[in-house]
Each structure stands twice: as structure tokens, then as C-alpha cells.
Image 1 (tube, rainbow, N blue to C red):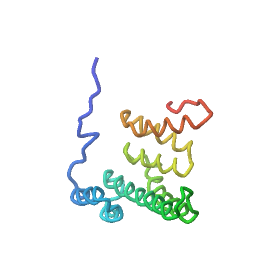
Image 2 (tube, one colour):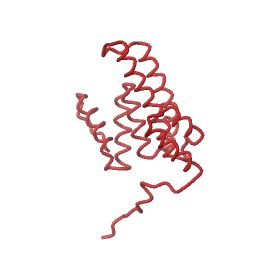
Image 3 (cartoon, helix red, strand yellow):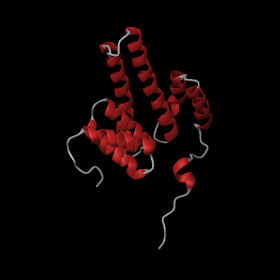
Length: 166
């Protein structure tokens, strides 16, 4: 019986390309919690050709919006989100969604970008779409544990018992 085997590099490693240096700098900035700078460095490379740069660019933007929401809640001294912060968060999420949605429709997202797209859809309360995206992500890379956790939380919230995987 012949087993289908894929080269390790196929899934986990992008060969050096035009984004390599910018990606190294952006990873350092991300580790230093300089999320806006990280996103700015990767902006020219945030497209389907450079999947790692696309992910880190959008994840940094997502992290900035989450951080702003948490800071606003702490300054208000309450756990209740203010409408201004929520509006800013949804505007940021909409911007990330508008970048990832056309790539998803073309089938041009790798598993980690599908995961991020699913997180964005979940945050925007598009739960059915998020379930489908997480299932697609897990079909590509079944061992992406974060996607399993997100999908599981979505399924446990719903009352339906429909199959997600076809």
C-alpha cells in the first residue's frame, strides 16, 4: 500500500523570497509587542504570494484592535465595552475580513490564514461561515489544534447537530 507523503517543507517552510527580510524584522517587532510597526513593515507583502507575511500582517492588526479594546475597558474601570471601542474593533475586523474574503473565495489562503479568517468571522458573529472556514482549514491541516478549539467552541454554542465536514 503506497502512502501519500508530503515533504516537510511543503507545509511548514516558505523558501526564501522577497519578503524574507521584512518577515524577519516583523517577527522581531511582533515579539517586542510593536504590532503597528510589524503590520506596517509587512504591508507591501500582505498578499496571496507571501502567505506568512499575509498572516503576520493581519494577525498584528487583529492584536492591535484587541489590545485597544482591553485598554479602553481598563481605563473605563469596567468590563463593559464602550460603543466607541466596539466600533473601532469591528472596523478593524472588517478591514481584515475585506482583505481575506476575496482570497478565500479564490481558494488562495493556506491553513493558517484560513484559521485567522475563521477567527475574524467568529468575532463578527458570522458563526456558520466561521464553522465552514474552520472545517476547510482542518481539512488542509488536520493537526492545527487552535482551529479544533475554535470549531469546538462554535459547535458547543449551537443547537444544531449538523455535520461540519462533508
